[in-house]
Length: 183
Image 1 (cartoon, helix red, strand yellow):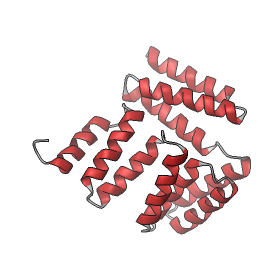
Image 2: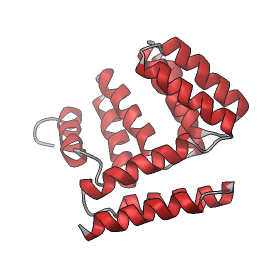
Image 3: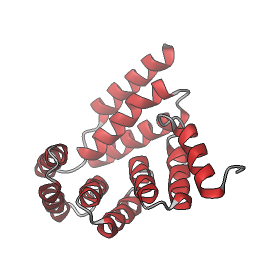
Image 4: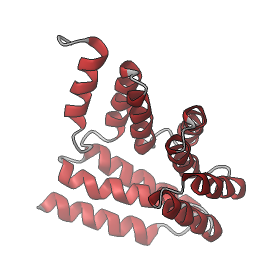
């Protein structure tokens, strides 16, 4: 229980401190450090959500509005509209890693796997600790039955987020599929 309260305090502190881009970066680093050290999935889950929210809101107000619109489009299965909206966000802020990640998801849902992979590469170039991008990359690889690729991407996710929900079980499953029953 104490760990959950500590995580909550950390979330509050990171939100309160994140005013300038430098402060936001430091706050993101702090939450990512806490995520890596989280003792359980229950403690990690709100940290995951917080860092993803920080990434989504890292742009200007106009970019944040576009990101929200793109997410609504994704939820409504309007994948082409989502791709267009995330592209607009990227045009305004080409250094916003999460815009590329979300566009990758939209592209993948619309059947553009190659475009999704290019966007994921850009995401990880801009933010190498984007565990959610590794999750998406693993899902895409698994969808293509590239079990070794899915396994490697999932390993990278667990390096950043060791207590990802079902993380170790998923790693074992991917390892079995990639390397055989006795792996």
